[in-house]
Length: 69
Image (tube, rainbow, N blue to C red):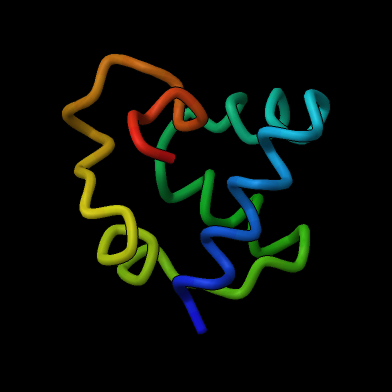
């Protein structure tokens, strides 16, 4: 279920500039997940990390710029 939710979120963010900007405003991954949950996307921080296999804290880019997403 988490994989589908993460995929749904990234597809929506790619198609919706306002959503993408809202998510990119998150100062950290914890806030990002909280924003996503508030928008109806049902996954936890741990599930997000497992699905994306990315340690966002190490990246120097916005969440929507993560390669392969």
